Length: 492
Image (cartoon, rainbow, N blue to C red; front, side, top):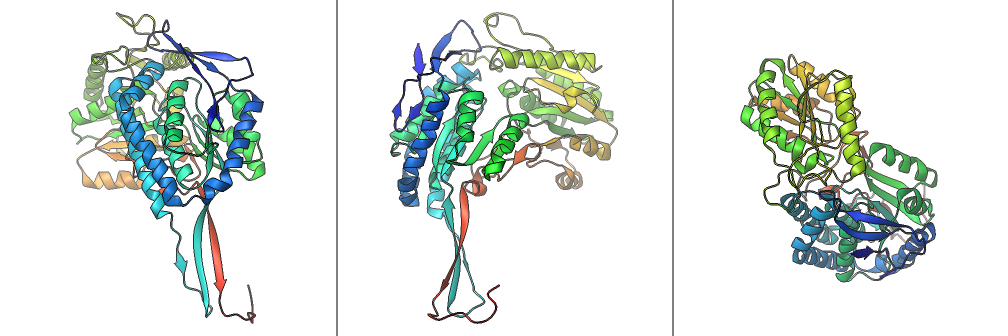
């Protein structure tokens, strides 16, 4: 059984806290993978101090040289792809196919960010004065705290750490305690790629202890967070008095809008994959299907049939379509919301309980669940469940569909299914989400394309793609006066 330790100043440390936590396979709770040594507040502060000490030298390292190290990390991730995928599956629960897909995304993002090291450019701006030169440059903040969730334990940290390093920042990385093995492996990979000691530090610990100590440290100048809206807003409020910059990618309640002229088979399959793939544990998962009433009966019949066809099981079984909830807490949350849906009067069509059967008895498996005749005032239509639960909301026309789809505090992703070009562009104009898809699932994205949402989903600059370094840099404006004499007149 492996012991997972924090990594500070270029070496693994033995925690003095005395607090530990097991790493348990959610598909088989009898499989205890390892034990986490939880970092103390003092050790968390040491990690920030280490990053602060390493910052000046790392900042002075030329950006292309920083990019080479990040590029080398991508190659090491490629070399350890199967080992990483197996670790994701065992401690998080997703299928091997999903884990390999996550790694493809992570590697692509790291490769893209490495290339950005040669494009860390500013602009030259014509001055209104003679013999004057104005230009801009991008500079790092200093120490960046990276706080990540368990559902994409390699990809999300990778798409935060890589641009932070390329920009010249040093990093304190605090992952979710449910996925320590992948966090340790990812940290090893970046350091093996050639990072100087202290540039990337890993703190394994609780949010209330380790996380709070990191966020409270005066050397932390920026925080990149992915997780719940409640936690993201608390983090923002905690660091705002110090002027710390915050980037937060938070909750989602993503709708698909299904119009009368859609390709029904495509709409059903895409909705099912978006709702039930990765056990619904994606911020971009499809949570609401907003369906025109004239086709709703057909849609509901087919989506229920598809939901019942998914095979549940351990992620390392090639026959498995859907793995377990990540832990007992999330499992109970999903079942609680199913009970709430029933109590609020939604019509339960399939699923709705713990799955049973061979190889399922020791895991946190929930049957794919479909509710029909859900209304916008029901909690299952408004609150993020993070499980394999789909709510169908029936509407009379496109106008009502847009009102229902936009009736949410969240605004991450969305989809529309139609073959009418006019409706496509009306949907694009009117939908209130940061990302949208046409005739494809709400999930998915590409490494070179920005990612993020609006409303209570997104705070701060977008992640990835052309915007990947925006959050991790400050813009400095430079004026060079080469007249050699005092300026006359109004200096503004």
